[in-house]
Image (tube, rainbow, N blue to C red; front, top):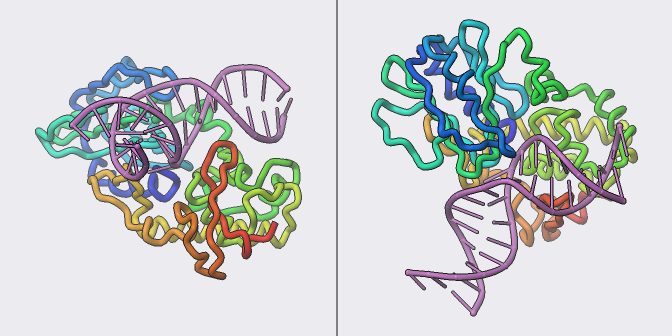
Amino acid sequence: MPELPEVETVRRTLAPAIGAVVASAWDSGMGLHVHRKPPRKKLRALVGATITGVRRHGKYLLVDLDRDRTLLVHLGMTGRLLIAAPAAPRAKHTHLVLELRDGRSLRFVDARRFGQLDVIEREREREHPALAELGPDPLTHGIDVAALHRRARARTTTLKAFVLDQRVLAGVGNIYASEALWRAKLRPTTRSNKLTAAQAARLADAIHEVLRHALDHGGTSLRDFVDAAGTEGENADYLWVYGRAGEPCSRCGTRIRRIVLQGRATYFCPTCQTP
DNA sequence: ATCACGACCTGGAGGC
DNA sequence: TGCCTCCAGGTCGTGA
């Protein structure tokens, strides 16, 4: 579900929560993200704190509060971070509720529990294991083509896996990896060490364009994704290859193919994405 | 160190 | 209606 454009859409729609004060904290106690339980004690320390802003790095949301505290949220595959109206019924699979003094609440709902929650000290956030190794965010920092090329040359993995590596660029996921490679006319199975400088420039441009375009359409909602207000994104209508196996490539008419790379569905055009 | 795989979960879709 | 299998926007731990 949530890649950079979706998470950024959530970030923007969380703006109405800024200035609200946390009245109480509740968590489900269930394990999230490979047995890690919600940090109950640290969540309780948020009671009385004011939400001062919401940032994002790659697919991670950083809800800033005063007292030097930041709520770290990763949506995993099915996670939703919602601003709920007063007295709204608690949805199934709700794992965190921060009641706000004005009656609304901030809720984290995640059916598959692949999401992550933590409370960290803002001063030391770069030391957090989830954030420590993240590469630059393509939309907020831009993409350094020379650095991208250098990194690609040093690896032998597929371009698809390279683009998905959050240490290289933070925020590209399975949908936009396929989309960007199609746009750059590069085959997902090509080894990254074969990337030329010109191709690296094309790839950087394609990644930026694909993410920007998706963000402009409120993200891609295939099944679960909604913003903080519960609204779906429109970008699913604009995908070039993802989920379109058997349909004609919009550039050359060849049937789009689906393959599996490292266990993930990968879509490409066998004609115009050169090996 | 790098690479590719399986595990972690629930639910929806489609076949019978 | 039910049961079964397959699939899903992510990340992490393992063993080669």
